[in-house]
Length: 160
Length: 430
Image (tube, rainbow over all chains, first blue to last red; front, side, top):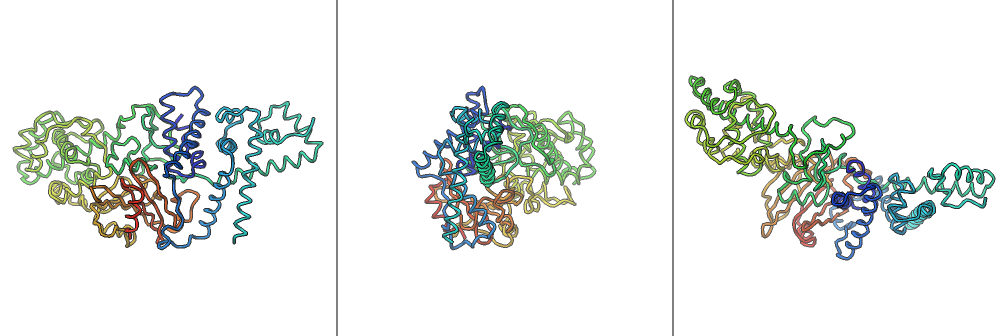
């Protein structure tokens, strides 16, 4: 179970939290819980717990003010301008992350689970949707993600 | 049928419609240009979503998952180390060798390329036999080094001393006097692998003394059977080895304790102080092999952190090192990147350990990155940071700050401090 889902959970939680260390920590927590109460149907269970932990972690982080900080330019004195390629890649990651952040929890989680190879039934089980609603949810989530990303790209181009 | 809704179109694209539904939808699409256009849109959104999400790949540091705390299942070949702030915190506590999340790095050439093997159920803390055998062989060769040296000094006594020392344990003595050149190499390995603290160091030597001339083969290293052999004391062991042998026998796990990250450094420093110097650096023991100190100055990524002179660390970083102003590092070490969360793979990490106010241990890790790896943000060697980024993470009481400098230094500063205090310290890193 661990070997089978570990990488997928890390990727999902990294996409969800934006913090690779946090993602690793949460995955450890997921498996600890799985050991404490082994689930009958591990796949949706593991991912549902992971997403719940990510939601709780986000709220707690904000409350405690210990949210991951990515402080641009704090040490500008030591910093040099980044290479173009790296800059572009970073812009893209930021854009996708910001676009994802604009989605509702349900839309975002449906997308992330689909990206991990979940079928509609598994998505429905993991996030508590009616199976018939998954297609509609994904359709909306995909459109909104792409629209939000494009809107940000347009804004960036205008700013330049 | 009426028009197909977006949910059905997506279900069609995702292969989630059963045959009847699919036929019905396709039948409608064949006669409805509007729905075909929406299907094309849906496909575009789907494809673009996959591309966008593909940009969010976690940094690839290690191919295999870390050991799971509390898990009875450990992937058999897993020796990867620390990837999270929490694990680094464990590392900072100096308990690396005991941490369930931190495992031995691979021996050179040991890990074959290819996918990780499936997990093998076994008790979590059980040490693999191969590692135990490895440790045992080192322990045994230590003793061979002692004995061979003592035996060779008065050559005419070889026959008489070899026999009693072999008699101390029920094992063949055929490796005794002729083990000199090989001994040096083994001792070198031993210097890297010896347990970190003095007690276990002595314990290992104690076990070695008990093991006598037993050939270095697999099997558990066992502590000596009680008191040291009088024959050893009287004939071949010098004062140092007598002191080691006089220590009480340790519990078996201590004798086979794995190398901690700082283990080799501890031993190499002790070697220069005297105890091990005669062991590893003695020309008679190993005429062709470098001393333990020389070895420590040129560590490979295969071991844990190895103590080195500051000059070596500076040379490793291409002539420049980041220091904390106004403080002197208590230790300087070099170790493999897979022991340090967030470090670029394949490049050894220079670690400076400071002791701050109230004894707080402050760890300053650094790597000099090739330019290409900085640009590679999609994984590989990328460290997930850009110039000017400062990544602050906290885990328990430990705060860690990572950043990239203009000169391609990846730097990580961590200590059990409040983030603000650590940031104040950060300003003194130059």
